Image 1 (tube, rainbow, N blue to C red):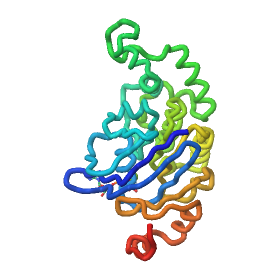
Image 2 (cartoon, rainbow, N blue to C red):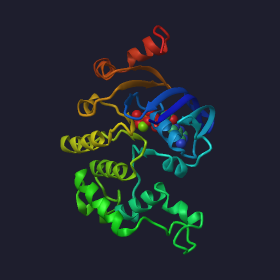
Image 3 (cartoon, helix red, strand yellow):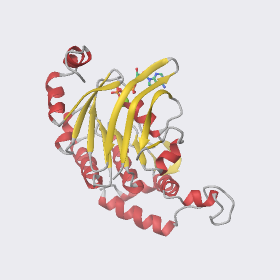
Image 4 (cartoon, rainbow, N blue to C red):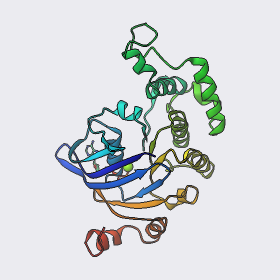
Amino acid sequence: MSVLEIRNLHATVGDTEILKGVNLTLRSGEIHAMMGPNGSGKSTLSYVIAGHPHYTITEGDILLDGESILDMQADERARAGIFLAFQYPVAVPGVSVANFLRTAVSNVRGYTEAEKNGNGNGSGVIGSNLMPMREFRRELNAKMTEFNVDSSFARRYLNDGFSGGEKKRTEVLQMAMLEPKFAILDESDSGLDIDALQVVSDGINKLATEKRGFLLITHYQRILNYVKPDFVSIFFGGRIVLTGGPEVAQMLEERGYKWVEEELVGGLVPA
Ligand SMILES: Nc1ncnc2c1ncn2[C@@H]1O[C@H](COP(=O)(O)OP(=O)(O)OP(=O)(O)O)[C@@H](O)[C@H]1O
Ligand SMILES: [Mg+2]
């Protein structure tokens, strides 16, 4: 079992503090949903966990199985098993989904590391040592079928001209290929039609084994009808102010966020 522990995390961008003491523990086998108003810092938290260089951590720590990952670059964190599905996936014209995934999978599974350590194919070019094409293709095809992604996607340029829903499906495929220990999904349900929501939810449920932990950032209770969270947290003003079960999502749906500020942040109820 793995544990990803975020301890009293403070982070700034420029002079502005955005994360103001986040405490959160994710464990494999658990789904943790996080809801919070626009601009409260949810995406910032996901970027900081994934190792985006734009943010400065001023206090606190992130521990993966007891070891701090703060000194690790984003690619090292990916190799350690941390995966982030972006709220706004970026298009990479010129790089096909298949090529992108082959490079990513090769990196995460250590093929490119072997090259750096001199155990590669001897070409001396870092990154030339990729997962063998035939093996990769076989796995990609199997996963595309399993996760309901049309095979034509493999040839398309990554996210280039993809609809919102197609991007989110592709992220699930990416997660299926990378098999992370912890997956952070930043609004993977936003903008999905009912069928796509079903596909994305089915994908998450298939991948939600005892070996994997999830942080599901969402605005709507809707996806939680398909994916059952163990915990639901309210993120407000740069930190988590309440953690409970699925009833928390229901409560937010009914009451919005105004009471959070009045009753939780105002200090009437301890966080
Ligand atoms: N690189 C940046 N430069 C300036 N401000 C930033 C940067 N990144 C985040 N912020 C600010 O930090 C705050 C939190 O943003 P963040 O995207 O984390 O919110 P969020 O909770 O994900 O919101 P949403 O629900 O709308 O996705 C916002 O006020 C945003 O403008
Ligand atoms: Mg966001």
